[in-house]
Amino acid sequence: MTPTPLPRAPSRARGLLTALFVESSPIDMRLVGRTLLHAAIVGAGAGVIAVLFFTGLELLERVLLGQLAGYRALRAAGESIMGEHAGAVFRPWLLVLLPALGALASGFVTRFAPECRGGGGDAMIEAFHNHGGVLRRRVVWVKALASIFTLGTGGAGGREGPTMQIGAAFGSLVGMTLRVAARERRILMIAGVAAGMSAIFRTPLGAALLAVEVLYRDDFETEALIPALLASVISYSVFISVFGEATLFAHAPRYPFVPAHLPLYALLALLVSLVAIPFLNIMQGVKRLSARLPLPDWARPAVGGLALGLLATAVLLFLASRHILPVGQGLGVLGGGYGAAQLAITGASWMPEGVGAVEFLTVLVLFKLVAASLTIGTGGSAGDFAPSLALGGLVGGAFGRALQLIVDDPRLDPGAFALVGMGTFYGGVAHVPVSSLVMVCELAGSYDLLVPLMLAEGVAFVALRDRSLYHAQLPSQRQSPAHPAPQLDVFRALKVRDVMIAGRPFVKFELRSPMNELIAKAADASWQDVFPVLDANEKMVGMVTNDVVRLLATERELEPLTLAADAMQPAVCARPDDDLRTATEMMLAHGLREVPVVDEGGRIVGFLDEAEVGRAYLDATARWEGPPQ
Image (cartoon, rainbow, N blue to C red):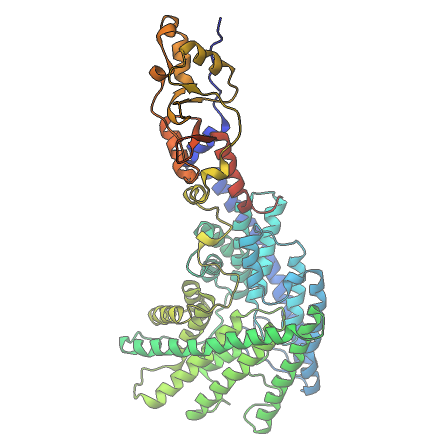
């Protein structure tokens, strides 16, 4: 008795292919809830870390710069959270050395984690895209210490780059500790970025938006927005519970919207873009020169620190000798520069007026640009957000005061142009127009300038299209390894020839093969579900499926009369040059587990099996999942 061929059990590959091409699964609310819980943990932890980081930074700056060097930092109205300290004797020689000593200590610390050198923004973005959201555990404390040493001794950078990387490292640490998948680990990393910045800058909405916007040039990491918002709110709450609520900048009570001034804001955006380009170029030039120094990487920031100390001290001594500045009074050349931005908004009693104010702020732009490049360009652990805001504010303040001299319009307020210049500068160079707009409004505690900011951000975004502060940014999610390419693209990129099985012996029939031969050979076939029918020239003219063979096996009276030509159906086959998407859709449409692959002459050169298709998909997407946990 001839054995009846048995159907193959449903395969896991078929389930995978059906899910990819046919079905769509709903959102698993359990996963969403778990991610939000984890994001809350990240927010609370990042808030505590931000409190410790800020406290350490303020104390070191107070002791070294204030008490020992007698330097009085120029601060924004809301920047002196711990209050001002009593003045001390100004020691210029110590002010020259402190930035170099701090940079040297910072560089030594980064030997334990070289990825902590520099601002931190690029390292965070790189970790998100290419390292599965993984940052080493030591980054949290190495980056914090390195940044405290750099910024606490006058390094001309901001806290945002370090807090980006510190928060990201803490989010990554939580993800690795809880052993979540790469996808959720990346989300928690972004939540950490939002949490860190929200606490330090007290800008909960802007920080969350920045965290999801800064990763791309033209896109947002929308999936992480809600976790980032939650983490941001919690860390902000932790921070203000310790230091209280305050906005960073003081400004006029109100900035009325004047439509006639919109062309002036557009012109300001172009001017800001013209200043931003040399800022980026000089910073890159300093990086190249620093790389040529015959020093180890960790020691190079000290050279930049020494040059910064000489520059800042020389400027202060010169202005003090001309009785423009009190002895030891800072100008925002050292540190992040928020005090310089405040100066551009509201002025100061000792600041020149009229044309002198325009000249003063313009020269300060040059000093701040060089100072920030010396710190960040040589690898100092300091961010570029604060210098960008300061430069934009100074350009805007100078522009606004120049307009007052040229245009007879009492409604012009230089402070408004300074605030718009802040957001425009950073939004343009970092390609984050939405988040920088919101952050400036939160830093000022006012949305009066929302419309001018929107216009100026748009102009700068276009003008600086080919420039970027963060080289690790990618155009969109489509280019990011963090996002597996849509199934359509994965299968379009593969050809049948890359996946098909060639050279495996297979069962085939001629047009006149009798049914008893079909049944016997099909029963012995261990892997085939489709049996090609060939003509005299070995060209495939049809096929018999296992389902048909099984049906005919039950009709024994038809067996002597039936030939392969009678039982076959039209040939379903693929070509080696077909893409895998087309071939897989064909298999699913005909309910087949495999299809023959034929050359241009119709001769069989291999088979495409569903198991191989599934394996090819998994291989093609495995690299997006990040390193093993």
